Length: 164
Image 1 (tube, rainbow, N blue to C red):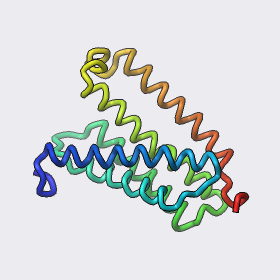
Image 2: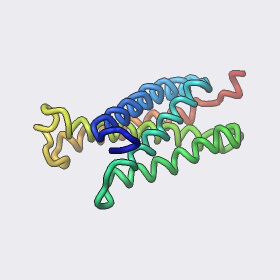
Image 3: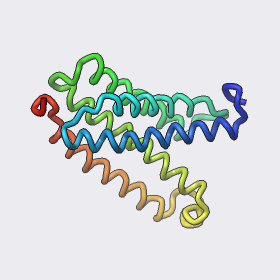
Image 4: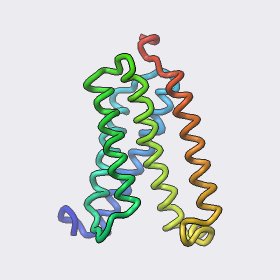
């Protein structure tokens, strides 16, 4: 049991929160690319992404895993995004700190989604049963390249002070 839920129910809750974080993150990044702050959607994205990482730490563990490493880095990235947005109001360098952190946070969620897809979806699992086969590496490389491109574009385009 985790938080009074069976492990299966807790996993379902964690996955639901993660999917909300991914969908809202995609909307927020779209807004960033169009110099829109989208305060309510951004708050939902950041809150659900923090919850995704936090609930990930509640699963039973017996050793340090790559998932724990991603969770730790994700929390640090989210702290930077939250500081940049809410403490420093995107002033000066905090604008690009926020953009990079928000895109990275979404990337981590999508990275884990791809990992879980290859673990849980039979057709994908058949292509990469160990997680180190070419299909998995190509998928993760494409996700990384996509987010590197989006992040670069977002830093260049996100100037909400010019749109006010």
